[in-house]
Image (spheres, rainbow, N blue to C red):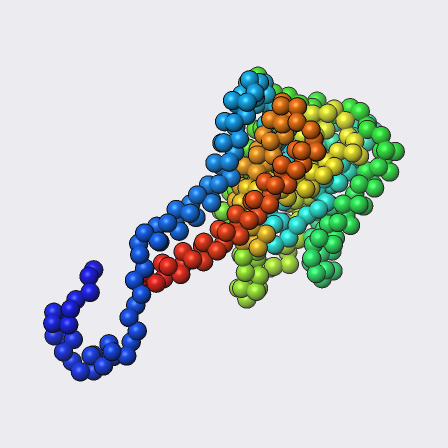
Length: 359
């Protein structure tokens, strides 16, 4: 609505009204174009990972005649499955302003424990159960020691369990792979329907389950509340300590799920599984657009980041690019992703200020 002139309103002839108008500062008009530009910039930054992934797929499809084949796409999905599962668990930790450096070692320990149980007892259900329980147990240790040990940051305990879990895996296996897994594990990790691997369906199931938990279950909303505003969550009576413990248990549990996929794909349990997987999972979450400042992130972000890492590695392998350069490229992508998060935060603050001014 356009502001009325003084002559248009009888109330404006009131001396008190005129005096108040003279003393009050004029509201600053915010150009709608500036507000729209900031809004578009925010929208593009949020879509950035998806757009980059699409561009990567397009470029690699043109650069290599093998990339877009169904067989190779199946390879990309199979290679990305483990990173995606670990990244979903890592996302829940990062949403609470934490980090889990132990997921790769937890994967290895879970795989070795499952292989040993299969050798001694047999049975697919028991083997899978041991893998999942081992992962959840390591996660519980991380969460309980961090929270109730009052450590300043989860970096400390998860770095310790990274070493402990890897050492246990080496000791239990005598440093050698343990061959043989149950049929169910082999099917999950190595089976497929045509070119589409079964592990992709498992990733989809995990993604949907965790998304529903985070968005539809009260405890899942508490995870975002604890990460977004820890002090506010405490004042609201949210059991902050147990929420923090729970995300590390979930992260460890999903490392156990990733162990099932890895063991099934390679038909073994090995203490060398999951090397640097913790860095891949963190990179996937950050590349996907989640924030280390907590309270923000979505399962879709983790999946996009995991796929981006898988596509980059697969495409570079097809083009015979050295592994060292692959690490450099992924590192550059991480830096760009982090800087994009910083820019997005500033744009969000600017957008809120402009919107308040325009109101």
